[in-house]
Length: 78
Image (cartoon, rainbow, N blue to C red):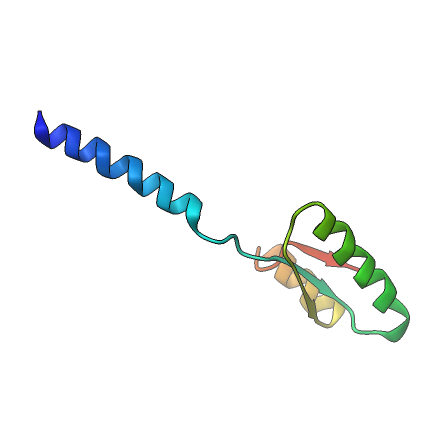
């Protein structure tokens, strides 16, 4: 009986620890082009207001789509 209580106790605290970890940033890839910088900042502002920590990664267009398809990044803008 004590073993079951210990197991339940450890599982409960393990679940609290997993919630305490800091969330990973929301990764956005974009094409580095001077005319598109304003749009990239607009997406950062929108996602930040929604509560996401956002990181921009400048990549060529095809590589950005490959990273998105492989699940490495969360979104590809412009």
